Image (cartoon, rainbow, N blue to C red; front, side, top):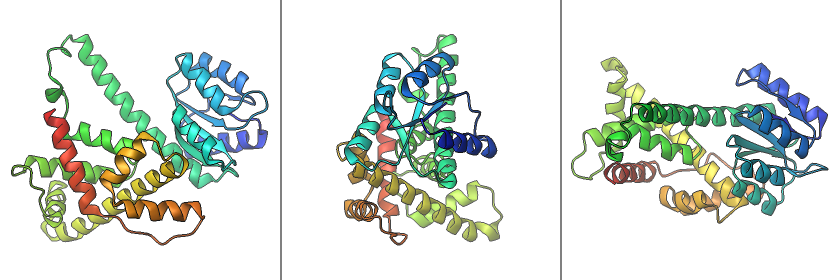
Length: 292
């Protein structure tokens, strides 16, 4: 569902959604009041909503919908750069923020991420529903229900990178590390990359090449997580996800530098991330959650 008082913006968003094949537009509204009514009636999975509208702004509309029991995902759209308003929007439960004027690449990228999150959450919900019907949920302990993949995917979803191509490599790497763990020690990265490369059933001659490809995909994915955390921290420094993940998974100096570059609208270089720290922390947290 698209809710925006700008008819050109609504038309552009609809064209992008339909042409990239990510989903189907259930409807459109030019104001918050009309949008809330249509959303509660049709219950779309995702709502793209403008921040500022004449009758009722996006934040107020989101609050109204949540109070009415709507549980879909929200993507905020606006040209407003007010950090307090953007931070409030994240607090109200938006998943991502798309800036105006509309950029096709940004819209496709954001919708792809939200789509991946929605698919994963729906998959988990269907599994839980099936187990409940079989009346075995209460008989299984949390530890038996949760796999390494389940735990790691939850972490990656919180970091906003479940849709990144390297997220699959991180899951595979954690599975290898935990399956062959010795106490709580973390294996050398080169050894893990090669182990995952073997698991992908590559030919012996391709192991080194595939290992390097895995490393690059993981590096880009972790960089995307850093960008997400810096973006959240820039708009809402007290956001729970930022407070928890930013100092735990990253060198905070790197987070601050990325935030500074975003704040000053600088075209920064690729930047750097501490891959070993990120993966070690993910490994330890996964072990802890599996054993809790």
